[in-house]
Figure (cartoon, rainbow, N blue to C red):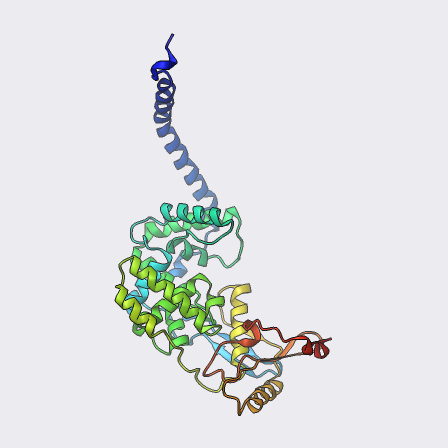
Length: 369
C-alpha cells in the first residue's frame, strides 16, 4: 500500500483525470462543432437579409409635423448618406476602434479576452459597468430592430457576427458599422453626425471632434452634445486617454485636444422649437429604433404657443445675459404644447426643459396642483 507520507500517492488520480480529459477533448470539439452547426441551421433562416447591408440607399427621412399640420423639422437625407471608409477621418476611425474594440483587427467576431474582462468588471461592480461586444457584434445588433434581450437573440447576433467576419473584410465591417451606428440627435452614421454637430463632413473632423463622436457610442441619447456639451466633452477626454493607451495618439496630442475641445456649429436656419425637435428625435430612436423608411411624425406642439413661449423667455431675460430659462406648456391631457430648452437654441442646444433636472421649488406647486 502506498504511503501518504511520501507525497506521491495523490498525484496518480490527478494524472489519471488529466489523461481522461485529453482523451475526451476530440469528442468535446466535435460536440461543440455539432452544436454550432445545429444552432446555425436553426437560427440562420431568421436572420435579416444581409444583401441590404451593401446598399448605398439614402438615409430615411423623418418629418415632424406640428399640431396645426405645419412642418416643424425634417431630418435625414434626400441623397446618399453612405460614405466609404476612405472618406472618414483616420483619427475618427482610430477613436472608434480604441474606444469600442481595440482588438478589432485581431479577433474573429468574438473577443474572448474582452468578454471575460467585462464579465469580471460587472461581477465586481454588482451591475453592468462594461460591455464586451465587438464592433462586429454591435453591427449584428443593429440589424435587429426589436429591443429583445433574449438568449435566442444573443445566439442570432453571435452567429451573424461570425458570418459577417467570414464574408467581409475588417475594413468592410468597419465601414458598415460607421454608416449604421446611432450618434444622437437623430443622426445615423458618422457622416450625418459630423454634419449635424460640426457642420462638416466626416472626412474633415479633427481629433477633439473625433473623440466626441466616438464617445457618443456608449450612450448616444444621454451623451449627445445637443443635450449636454460639457458631459460630451468629458466623455471625449476618456476617449483620448484610451487612444493614448492603444498607441493611436501621443499624450501631447491628447493634451492639445483637451485644451481645445469640440464645439458645435451654429444651428442653421430659423427652425422653430429646436429643443423640442431634438427631444422627439431621441425619443423616437430610443423607442422605435432606426427608421428604414421615411417617417412622418405628428406631434402635439402648437406653433403659436411655441412662438409666444420663446418670445416670453427672450423678453424676460433681455437684460440678464447670464440667466437661462426653460418652459414647458401642457394641456389638460398632459400633451406638450410648447417647449423652450434655453434662450438661444442656435447658440446653446442644451435642453434645460428635459435634461436640466432642476427643482422648481414649492412656489411652483400652486400652478401645477
